[in-house]
Amino acid sequence: MGILSELTMLVVWRDMIGIIGDLMPIRIETESPFLLIVAEGQITGADLVDLLGRVEHLEKGLQRIPDRVLDLSGVALDTNFRAMLELASRRVSRVFPNSFRSAIVAPTPATMGFARMFQTLNTNPQIELRIFDTRESAEAWLTNPSSP
Image 1 (cartoon, rainbow, N blue to C red):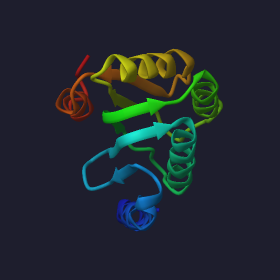
Image 2: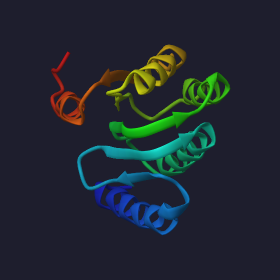
Image 3: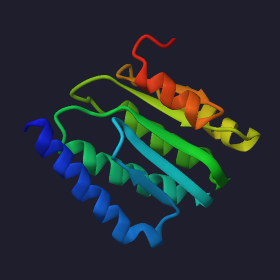
């Protein structure tokens, strides 16, 4: 599948997310060179598990897994260790067609705690996961391959 086909799939998937956007306080944007996942409001463990299912569905149709930013700036988390373990376990067990970078924006102590827990549990060597306190620094890391 060529890059045009992959981009078309991303646009279709973005439109599908828009249709169900009222059901989940998380949106996925695909216009940039990476996935931008923005969460807002009260987010539960079930919301995060549902989001991962949607991302996995998207990834199955791609020849190359894109880098991504998960922005938790506008979030109040209502989750627990069990949900975090399920999320990380699903990522650890996957074999991807390529390695990729995943940036989590976590500006508050609560979101930082969630991000650190997920980072610790997610040991997939194909996923380079970093935590940032601003979206700008996360995006700078993703767009600069030589960034530490």
